[in-house]
Image 1 (spheres, rainbow, N blue to C red):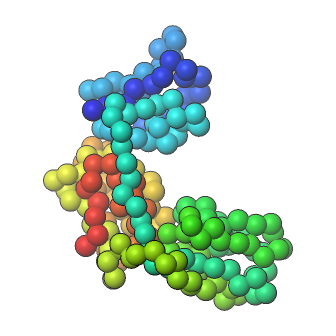
Image 2: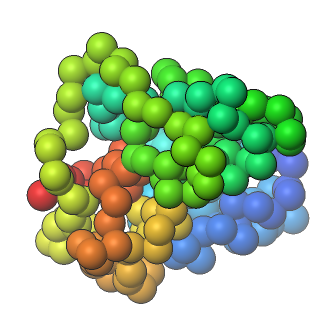
Length: 194
């Protein structure tokens, strides 16, 4: 399976700029995908604002579900935006100098916001969801399955993943915060909880 680009392509070139395999090239009409070079990572689909880059089949992302979510304590929040800038899934929003809010349905419970808040303005709340992330787990990459697309590496908010394009990547267990972004974004099923 490889990706292809719809004839609705507006030739912005963003997909080609971000393709880790160099599989996307311009033609006089529109950008195209070289199926021999394509590593099926889906970066082109994610990068295209119109999602004109499409997979040949349906792809799904395994959920990152935690029984907890962050909540901002409004009377402690000074609206500095450090938590929002740290959030890897953009679940925190607001206006500077006003209390920010967390979209608890989007929060993945990684805790990065807690590490940035200097006013102790965050608290954990139970979401009522079943926990699917094993307690104390860390992400791990199966080198036999990894296609080396680099999507996990680009997704990791703490730079815990390293590797070269088209080679198996690895996770630095000491840096991993178990946010689950790499697990949810890996399209080859190479990243799992350890």
